[in-house]
Image (cartoon, rainbow, N blue to C red; front, side, top):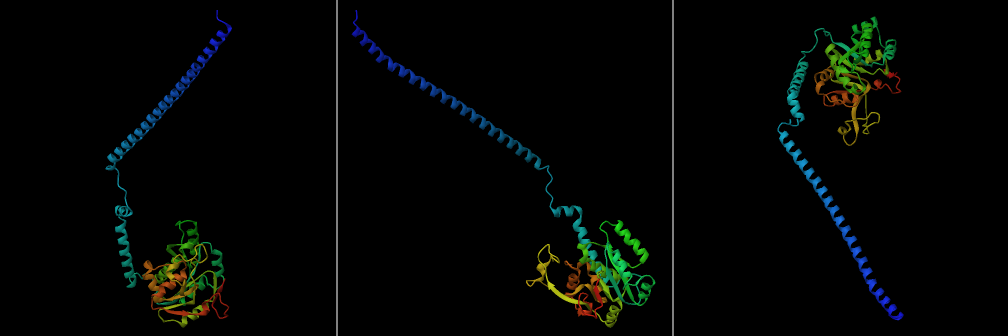
Length: 352
């Protein structure tokens, strides 16, 4: 029989041996769990790598397929045409060359007098006065017909004296529309229009109107002088005729209210000049006749007619005409009676 002391001693020995065993079991379990997580992570990484590699291989294969298709079709694909290629294909270069040659022939024919119409006046008249007008200026035209401008039989008698007056207008951008028809109808009644068939009546085309007016007037009438007048002024017709009579038989005259001025270089402002850089560092216009009223003698108007195809136009018609006169042996006549905005009492024009 074991004593109580021996039993308690054995119990303590058993407990001391049982504790290391439990700790070892816990450590083994933790190590197993950690190894299992590592295997799972490695497996997932392997799957991700295989997925990415597969996508890259698929993309590379697609690129190779597209490259092969492009290479095979490149020979069949039409080449990109340049502007020059298209012009050659359409024959534009040849047409352009023929147009230039035709313009040169036309200029030569005009200079030699071959284009003078058969019904042109045999006797040289004093003046052709062209009053610029527009489609929306019918009331203003009627006002002029009732004031300084003769009408009907009085207009015919004035022409017999050697002075022709016509309202000058181009054609609508939409040829034959109601604007053109209204002008044609008005002209049938009044017979006081010079219609510029080749000119488009628009604000942006105004600088070119001078070329068409002087060319049409020269080809229709043989006059000593050709006068451009705005429809924004009233005119002392007898006073103008007196000025023209005083210069009769003088050649190369460019007559008007001579002025100069600053070139406007800022786009969007009134009187903006797109070609401002051509006027030098001073940015000032050369001397020219104001646009309300100016006069060209026969030789100068004929020069405009002959060279109209190559004459440069600027933002304003008076600047354009002044630039054409710069290169000619023209006599600039500065007559302040033609300054319509001045306070001089003897002036022959005034703002309407």
